[in-house]
Image (tube, rainbow, N blue to C red; front, side, top):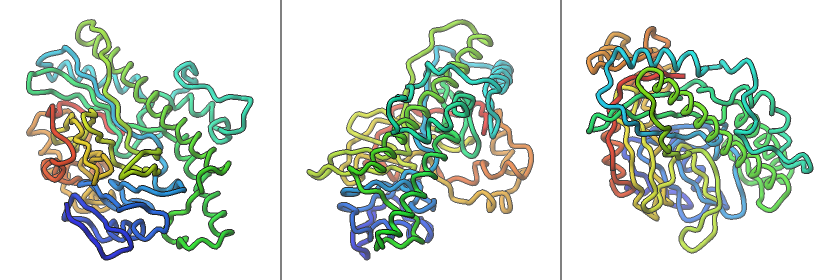
Length: 388
């Protein structure tokens, strides 16, 4: 851990290769009048919108929509199957079945999925106005992967057991909630002549106000929606595996989110913890840290490090922006990295290079940098991947 003490509050960093844009955003966080104790940057930290991805911020008395972000509840889930030593030919069949049953990118289901998979908004209250407005669209997006860095990956542990890992979030519903409340926060902060510069994109909502209560309720609904989204996809992947291999019971999944805010107690105070691309790592808490599609992923156990606000990284973290990766990475070289390992992948053209292995940090370095935050329980080798 490195400590930057040049701002109002210290910035504690579990990396030494932070980009200048992310550092500037962290400095903005450290100078917030309501920030608490220090700012924590995980080893996968990189520049985001308003707040670095891989950042953890504790606040007193306020919540900041942009410190959660637009993909509310985005996270990981994973299951260990009893399937041993899966052959590439069978895995290709599974991947084909997955692509038929799970829409990716901007695609969604033509018909709404079952509303019983979600907690129903209470029609007697007005606390979920954005969710209710986008309810039908949300049901059509339930059980869909989305785009960007979202993925479904088949992996193998050291015993030869097949694992399934899914990374996805709240789809367009989370974005609608985030945008609506950030817009309100910006308007209110301007009216209050807030000392937080508008250019920092960190407009806040005071806790125990109606608008903050509504944001937190809608945010928590999106966290549950994102979990339901991943769970439905996992059900469908299980169906594909049963069809390609042989019947087995759906294993209990590990689940962990990395975009949310919640009240927690740290250093003797109740504070609002914002994790934006960061994972809770309380003592003995089981988590998931994926690499890129060409590198290992890890199941981990939290060590409860108070200096990181009981947090760890949510992945390898980007070392290149998307456009930069498409400009600078070699298509042939990146395909070779995956092909040489026998990984079934979807990199076909230069436009796919934004999610190539070379666009991400070295996951082994990231894991070494957070050895005081988590311990590794299982290392998973990639076999096949569907990207959003």
